View 1 (cartoon, rainbow, N blue to C red):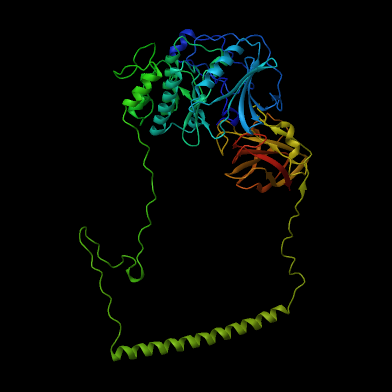
View 2 (cartoon, one colour):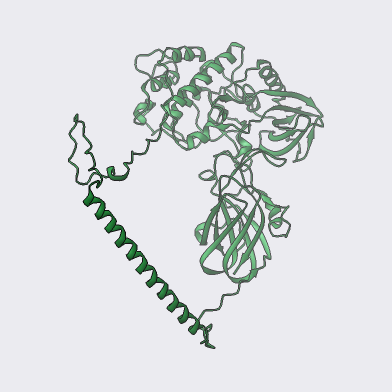
Length: 571
């Protein structure tokens, strides 16, 4: 699950491996920074040829709130490396979120980035994330593109498991058709990987970074059609097996075992659709050698589209419906006790009930039974009234006899004490804080101010890509903590949190070193966590592990996110 900030921008790389066809001309200066805190969305160039060595130009000093062309307000930096940076921004003129790539005008790749952006914008194919603007001004070159808050990366989808055959078929069909159209216009991607492929809420697949991502990183290839075709084969392989088709791990996927070479998807995982397995192998040929079962290799997206068209269409799975409830018999027909077991094929005749008593003897019997019932009811009513009167007298007698020590046996309630928060610090053991300077807003007594997390693509559970977000509070001295009341800014889905007794305000201490107090979850905007028995501690960690989905606002895009407004502890 990647943060929402990476949902519409993919220009830096995950450490992945080169495809086998690109190893011969692998770049040694791909610009991948070693500081992972800055390289938030990195991947190795896929199918790249040579890569330019970046110039020595320092990246422009930009910050949140900076405006480009008096229109695009920068909100959050997504990537910063190789002399360029990528941002989530707001187009104040059209009031919508956009993505922006920025680099100095004298950067060695500035001209090629502008050319790639303008060429991509001219394509106008809705299957690609559209370039909206490409400008050079004030010693800066910046490219503005669409931001898709409702889209999910293929990386995030594969984190939950392989795709169903119909979904994988739709993905490879739409991606191959889009890339075939792009190559007909002379445009290549060269960095087509799971981070560059998005699925919208309507089920459509879209590609981001056409030509631009490769230009930003200086990636080139002498065989661009072959490079993009092999990349599509790798995407299909990963979608079918949840494995990356090379030896190295990449994009959150495990690579293939070493020294066994490239094996077909249906040999990696049971139940893989054989037609799609062969299609992936035809696209993943090595140096022109056919790795599939006597099928010709696909070396261009156009050939891959033709191969997909020759396959039998894979239809979506049939919808499942709940079985209707079993028919319930009524009155004397209900149940089967005392009935003979029905034989297959034999119609059972329901016996006719006997006629009611219609003779003179029957009528006399009915009157006699009715008289007995009336007498019994009268006698029972008289006895019940007599018993109630005796009970009432007994209660009145007891009420006149009071004792002085009657209340001494009941325990006195334990007084509830509000614990004052003296200090707080954001807890981020992975080294990536959310908004560390805003923690004091969670206990300032003002419910309109809050500390917030970033927006995430997957949820409500934030793991495995983010174990959680939270704040450590200092109570000044040791107290017996019993309850925490946490005010939340967003409701819906659910929010889950856990209390831990910590040793200090350290943001790098491990959770294993802390004592778990209690946990709870809610779908509303207030979360109460109560311990079974009070725990003595000075430092308390509020650790959020799940967050609800919420739409975009002035601070962040749509996604799974949460903000804490007020925190109160009692003991």
